[in-house]
Length: 293
Image (tube, rainbow, N blue to C red):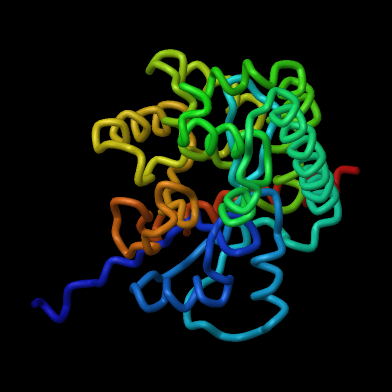
């Protein structure tokens, strides 16, 4: 091996802990990432910052760069998730929205279970707790997996108005982008393949989201083929969007996989540095605006 060859630094920008859907505590996840050779790790729990706050409050040096993040539920058709990277975990507006989303998820999940019981559909509550199911979407995914519903679409139709009300309670994509930016972060569209759009419709959606404040696309993901990744990179270049990627550790069907030090699911650290430059540009623009005020 050439000793002068520079080692590729890899960052995993999409992971989960026990604060949301994973079986690993924040500390365990970071130690595992370090063991696997990652240079940087973003913790992006679903609609909560508790995992990354736990690590930051501990003040321990894990020998790996930690990036505070969150995966936000938004009101959209098709359903999508937005990753907020480099956010300030103590931002009051962001925490207020996340707390509200958590409350809504629990409230609507309880109503969904009652609706199932009303139609004599038995639900294994022990399994729901074990899987950390916390929203109607996750409940539908589980019920589709065990063949209660043939498809997720059938599940959404079953819950009907309840599902519609739940989605309407969530923040819009634009509200999500604005909140992430005010928390000094970047807004990244997570796992585009799950949207189920054809190539042209996806490109049009990205264009509309870009106009509303989207900063980037999650290109590298275990669910994306090499061909699909290449297409996303092309869209990112054409629309001037950042490229991100991560293992989605903790999310089924990846819950038993490790956060991998591999360019196939993570990203080269140079892309993280590009993200930091964009954040610095945002802050300079804001400072200039305050000066004129």
